[in-house]
Length: 193
Image (cartoon, rainbow, N blue to C red):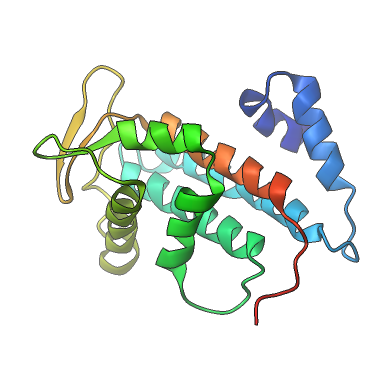
């Protein structure tokens, strides 16, 4: 369990809190109706860690990193809703950010992106533009065209036309906090019809 605990420590107040979180869900068996929460906890660690490891293979290709964060958000959202069919990827990615993500992190997301003319964007508009970047990576092979802020200055992107005030690490933290919320609120509902 150390691997899971080490991953989650930065998102909790202490190592003990992270360990309690991991241990609570790690003990779930396949027969337990809450077992999908354990899968969400594991998949978050796996997919977000992959996103973090990508600069070692492809430096300065933040679109690739974004791809894995959005895959994580979509997957967790579908698991949380017991959706086990194909499709609706954009809708479930939006659901993650609009419904599962705690409000304080939605605020951070809104502060992190503004339109090219300086207008604020809604969470749905932000998710759509990020999802479009994801689609460019998946369907067009374009994994070099989108950039996050560098911590010093915002980044002006032209496709999509957006000013990004948030660093990749900040978006990663937002996604992980949303995943933690999803894990903790999973209710073991019956699969969607």
